[in-house]
Image (cartoon, rainbow, N blue to C red; front, side, top):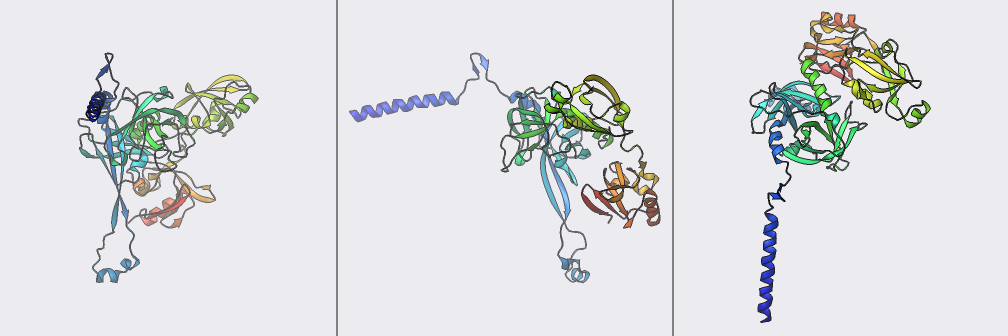
Length: 453
């Protein structure tokens, strides 16, 4: 009898638990007449504008020394063509202009790629053309056939606030269309050593390998940033991700579309952060601003009337938070663009105007030297790191100079294995050789030999 009662009670308990479980599993579509919050409708509009990017880089495979022996190659009938292997990478991209088929992504996603493929949300794979890329900001622009595309609307990333909800979308680890959510954890992050110009949005929305180049959107589905990097001491995601603000990415994109490269100007000032101690010594309230430590004679800053000791508070009406912020703002300005500066000098406010100067104003077009260098700007021989060389200015993509391997910022040390003493030497060597066969250049801290096969 007791056993029967116990079994009956157990059955009632199991039935009650089953009812509770079923009730929890089937959540109601609304609570107190209000629909449950969901990101699904927004994502249905946004996801078609997110693409997968795959690249192919062909790398010369190393050969065994015996394979370089002509007799050995003939004896074993080894093919004469160069052995190559393909290196693949995966990333994400954002369709930002459906009419023109423009896709925004990271420079590091497509760097050194021989072939770029874009896979749309519907699974269609298209061949992409690289319009241009900027390593300094890690921004690249691609072009794909503009048929039936969906683009993401852009918003003003300067209006973001810490605590705003954001959603990251991309293809981490090759997984298609993955969505993560979080908040804006910080703004204006700099000094990370990731890029030349840094002004990152920090978020705790999960960003993983393959997310690079994907969008960071607000809850309205508007693009606020482009996912770029993570801080991962242990190799995994710890909730610290970084995105390039859309205002910066869009400004760079416009130059890449127009010129194929970013044409940064020169202003001619050295600055440092305005610390509380310096602000107090200068009688300035608040620590925002950049203190000018020196002004280059004859520079655009000198022409504008700036002096060492001035404190720049705003640039074109936008507050200057520090020296890095000022550098970032100048980095987005074009050559010849007018700048308006609010400065404090000896406790008095002043408004000064100037123009961004062309750093290659005295450079000459490469075609004046040789048709082999057409598309590049070349300067007179100068000395840097005790190495005399001819500096290279802007280089047009797909120009003869570009195909010769020259890039902006290079310094030419030798032409066709002959040391040069200036532009006249370059012209003479190329005239005698009837073209470029090899260039020894300095690129950053590296010495590189460029040869034509």
